[in-house]
Structures are given as C-alpha cells and as structure tokens.
Image (tube, rainbow, N blue to C red; front, side):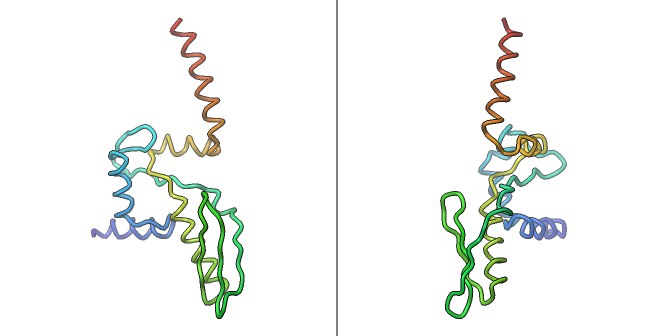
Length: 140
C-alpha cells in the first residue's frame, strides 16, 4: 500500500469502520461510480454514505458475568458487544454500528443532496413529483 493508501485506510477505519479494500469492493459492486447517479470518480475519491442516526441510537448496557454487554437493535438486526469494562463494550458496539451504517459510495452532489433532504425518502419523492409536474408542463 502506498502511504496515501495507508492514510486513507486509517481514516476509513476510524470514521466508518471499513477498510480501503472494502471501499474499493463496494465501488466495484456499484459499477465503479456513484450508487445514485452512476458518475465515476474524478480526481477525488467518492464519498462514503452512511446513516447519521447511529449516533442517537440508545444502547442497553448491563453487567454480564465478569464483564459488560452492550446491545441494541438497528435496521432490523440485533447488535451486541461484550467488554471487560462498560466503556469497552459501548465503544466496541459503536464501532460495529459505524460499519453497519455504511450504505454505499456517492459523489458529492448526491451525498450532499441526501443530507439536505434529511435522508427522508418522502421528501425526496415529493421533490421528484414536483419536478416531474413542471417538466410535463414544459413538454406540453
């Protein structure tokens, strides 16, 4: 790995819980471009899209034998992590949730668009209907 790849790998691991290899695999699985519009990366890498709500998820943490168990439900699945100390269990589970929150790889306009629409599919659908309505008037 080049030193820049090492730095990217470290940042991806810290921020999203994924490796550069996982990022690249995800990009290939998406056809080499943005998961929404398909645009391939230019001079900069595409952005990792993730669910921002994970920071607000409540964790249940209880003593378990000689350690602690932290657990929560997320996207229909149960996530749990055991640790010797309470903070170790919580930190480990937060790291697992980071990885689980990754949705795909997006270019900047699509990624920032989701953020501006607050990740709300109902708002996005209403916006699409609004644009279609005016496009139909222009075509008539």
